[in-house]
Length: 399
Image 1 (cartoon, helix red, strand yellow):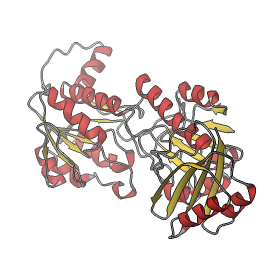
Image 2 (cartoon, rainbow, N blue to C red):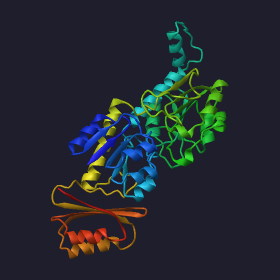
Image 3 (cartoon, helix red, strand yellow):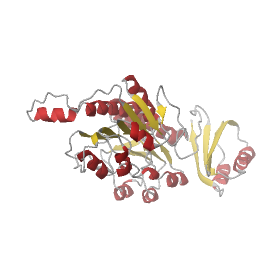
Image 4 (cartoon, rainbow, N blue to C red):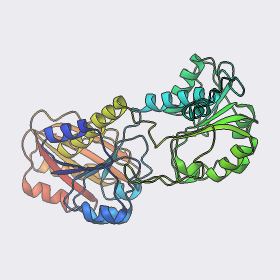
């Protein structure tokens, strides 16, 4: 079986997959849709980060593909519905780089409040500008977090430890950490925060939601940070508000259009502005985070393809079957309609199968049942399951 890993995924993922018997090809850059169409025939596992997009056309060409691993937090770069309908599992690493992103944001808050970008640039130009003008402590100032999920809550905790007052806004019900306070509306947060940090996901409804109106509502001389998704912010409006002096500084780690490969030219209307930090989507790019992500996602890909385990899949029913230690395993992904499980068990009973364990789950229009048996299921029983009109796929494994 072959695995293709793109976008400079950590070598630990290669080690794990090769140790489990996969032939692994590692590439440093992302691939376009046309390039993926050419590259995926014969590939069983695909590993990507945030810059490779898996569309229905790509999936049409990936006739051998079993699973996609997103070696990052987000999965919006994959058409999850289409992949799920084809029975292609998608896995990600929802927690592995949380700390790295939060530490970057904390560092940016301090750097922008102290105007370190301007100070260091002048020093490189040979100018000694020993002045406190525009430089502030972060202690006692108000941080507004938009999106209070895994990253937002951990940022909340670290910010409080630094002496920041924390307020947050989220469309979902979220439990406040520490002394953080929920704001009823985004406008309320923007009017109170000295620093606004975005941590929303990449769902289509979030595209362009932070623009001229939101920047205008922010406090004069406040700071703006986007380490979430590039498409959620109107960078033209941000530039206008920085040049007008309304926004005192900004830090962005994500952009609507990002270069495909290392060394490619980066274009942005924010280049060249004072007190603006631009980083190349490295929020989760620490050695610690990338190694942990590589270990976690590669393990999920291997466990799915070699044992049918779907725990933490984002688009298939999650069955937490234990590792297969002895005997045989049948994985059956099917359309979720009444009577399917009864039919499966009837076929198993008629074949005289000695069942040692059975695990099942449903998700939307799909169901997944994993059955462990002492002996292999007869071929005629497997054929009956495969030929059912409700079958999406049927796979078997031996211990």
